[in-house]
Image (cartoon, rainbow, N blue to C red):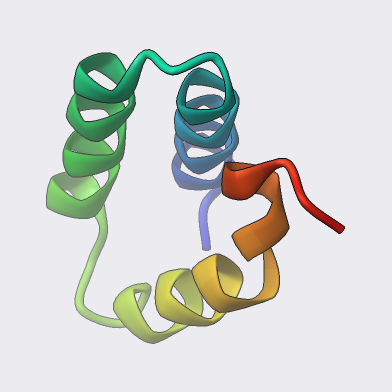
Length: 58
């Protein structure tokens, strides 16, 4: 996954933890739209591996 996509996902997680859900969704959606088909499985795995980044739970 390209660094710009990863940074967008990390930003989205940070916004989610701050209860800024509309902004978080907009950032994540932009990342998904810019991602190539080859990146989609990696993004899905990243989201699974980083669920706690969005929830703030360990």
